Length: 355
Ligand code: FMN
Image (cartoon, rainbow, N blue to C red; front, side, top):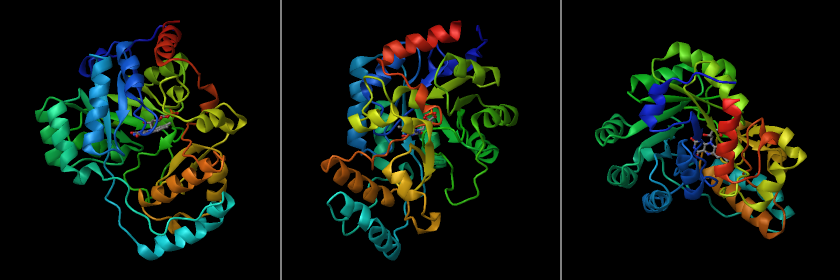
């Protein structure tokens, strides 16, 4: 299937193939991103949960492996509002889950990482390191942050899950929109997690955005192979962003329990849940998502405060030999994930796209 690819986005991003390896905090690695960029795609690092120093080390590790373009991704959520009573009630609710793995919940919860909106060290680091691309999830950075990054010659991307978000991304002067469908693995990029969510799928959203904004659109969500990439290009997207397709690669930081769950029947039933982190995210069905099935959204503390409890529960579960409390993010087409090196996956995707 030979597909026409608009060349302007590829030129802007400095890539030959219309393939972006999604930034995946906790899963993407410098080795993964380097393999993708060396193969002609855009490799990405999920830096959202890192300090500026950790992020700088990750960028430098990529640079030791590749001279190609790099996309680094940051979270621009509204800084968490602590609510001591709600957090205490949440820890009580999680009590039986901790007890089930022979542990006790932590006594208090913290905001375990900072939004880029208030992270001046991260901005300073980016202006020094100058990655080719910076992308944003959960909203928009401040206008002065956009101006500073643009001033350093950096191309900017931001996630939209609906037309209104895409328009505000375009109006803010961001160069490219990432259209994230409801199928997508990991955190939903919604600007406001408490607003009504139209839950647009990748097909509808991609088409809506290519008709609603003038900036190039990258489609994401449920794309696993060359046919999926060709499909979104046919809808007018300029490239495809694949996350789950890379979770089982050799360079992924996914642990053994995550990989095993991805290769199991659980992959056929992914679940959108906010109980793991405090924001809606799509995960493989596991013990944690089953716990979440009975929980109302409004009892869950803010993101990423909730994630502090989620990570503690996962650590306790793993210590007891139970992998069921992991943040096993994956999209709806998870069963199509392939276990191979990122380089071979890129060659395979390119071959499928040319067919
Ligand atoms: N998107 C981000 O913008 N930043 C992240 O840090 C991030 N982490 C993710 C972690 C995992 C394990 C996965 C699967 C997705 C993550 N995403 C993140 C979402 C991806 O950017 C993308 O929207 C999604 O992977 C596309 O759907 P797919 O997984 O079906 O390919």
